[in-house]
Length: 167
Image (cartoon, rainbow, N blue to C red; front, side, top):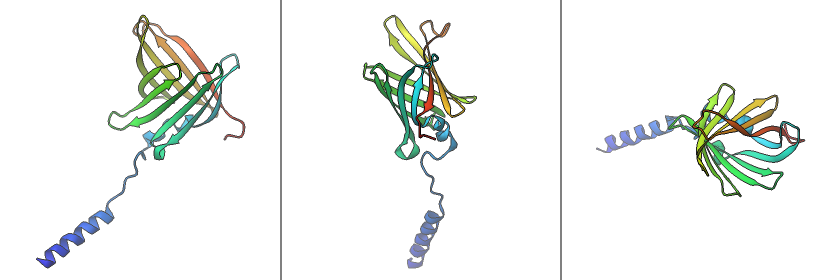
């Protein structure tokens, strides 16, 4: 019996030490949105600065945290994470105007595209946001539809440029 217990303990010890220890959030899917990480100045198509945004990796690289400060005084934050259970990205956005936006999506070509719905004064509003990396910058276009996706209106068109001193 003593030899059996010793053998079992040895087997358990060898199995545990030889087992691969998987690091959470280590697959390449968790890196898909890393092109957005950085300290940014954000400009509209006319070249006017509309805000600043800091995107940082948090929680051991499992999530991205966004901290937005608009030129008009609006402030917002989002948390972004790849959900391995659904094989999709998720963003939850909140701001100082009381807006809550929940988006889901993933990579479409070179762009991160997420969609979600909110409740507007006249009914459901469909939201679609696309982030596209381009030569060290990131283009973000946010479109909305109030006719179930028949037509779309761009409500935000921003070009993210790294702040001076950022690489």
